[in-house]
Length: 335
Image 1 (cartoon, rainbow, N blue to C red):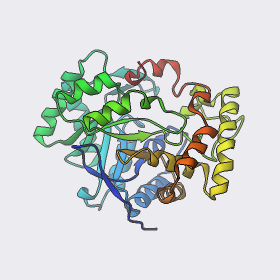
Image 2 (image 1 turned 120 degrees about the vertical axis):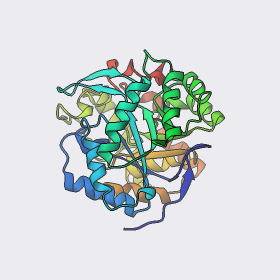
Image 3 (image 1 turned 135 degrees about the vertical axis):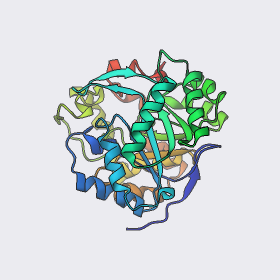
Image 4 (image 1 turned 90 degrees about the vertical axis):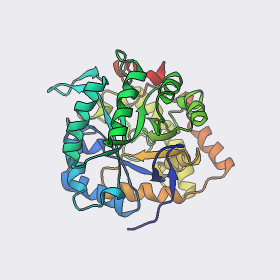
């Protein structure tokens, strides 16, 4: 199916992107096994629909995700695609995380490998995956600015940082966007981070819009997740927490049924209603899931309908953190 998606500029200084983007993390084991042919078909379905923003990280599958995307883009005009890449996370052969490194020298090293795996000579938006506690943000952004000047990256982005860090970064170089979790049931950015981003003219690329499948029909009460699945370690998906959260999803299901849409489509439509400076990044792993997400772009919700949706699933009634405690401690956005 081909569809002409509307476009928006990502912040004051960022590139023009389609209204929704594709997040590729789930194609490299983050939610269990994936099939390469299906993943490639999903990427092509997104591009065929008019989407152009593909988000990845060099540490997704220890380079697997970038290689997959590079393969998918063979024969595709480079200027038709916006590649958003996170870097800096240190991984071990046992899949462990060992912190982050965003020193300028390390940044150049990470970038060199990403360019090779993706099969390109530039990246559209390059961003540290997390704030490095050992490197001032000014030093990190300064190193990235040199890479912009050299033509290796086009725009600088950030991920999961707080308002103060946003201000300090933007004082060094224009920041295109902040990638951060934002959904109907994860609304922490609304208090300070989102207003600051808007003040500074920084766009938001929102991941986790479906709360890692919770706001959909793919998660069931008592579901057991594979050890390699992120949700096996996420507090929101454990035992009684999951049962309580699914009761909120059931309440949303009644509203979705009245609109003859899925809960996932309702959640995407809600995110789109937050403003044109917010671009949802949707982690579809199969073409049919992308098609479902695509249909949400056309859903129009009145103020009364939005209020009813928010009343059915209040963010303050969600049980369990969005990451495990150790990972939450790494989030500058949560301080």
